[in-house]
Length: 118
Image 1 (cartoon, rainbow, N blue to C red):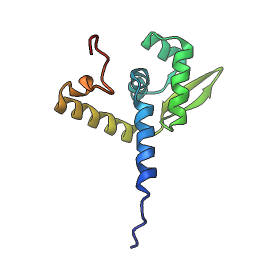
Image 2: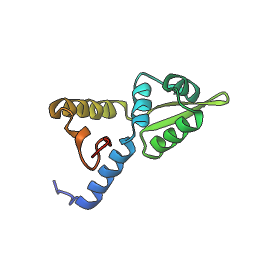
Image 3: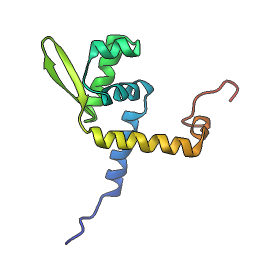
Image 4: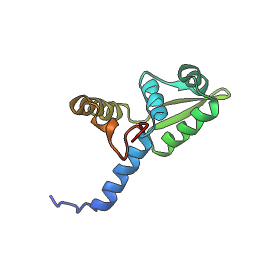
């Protein structure tokens, strides 16, 4: 068996793109809802309390990232996860990592939540 060389830069760049795609609380909330099953945009907007245009924009991003797909249902589109087991595994790992590190990531001076006086 021959090992195929991995272009580390390309691989790391793709991973960074994935994490940027996941790096928005609204997109994560949408993914959590879709983990429960298929949803139409109107259902997502009602659950999340967001404008239809906001939800649609985030769904477009998630579709471009290959994380969700849609199918027509009448005049609406129904969205679902494309890789449910892998995504749930990743999100579960993230929750375990956050539990292990406490709130340190929130206090990060670059990517943490902005706190007044800092």
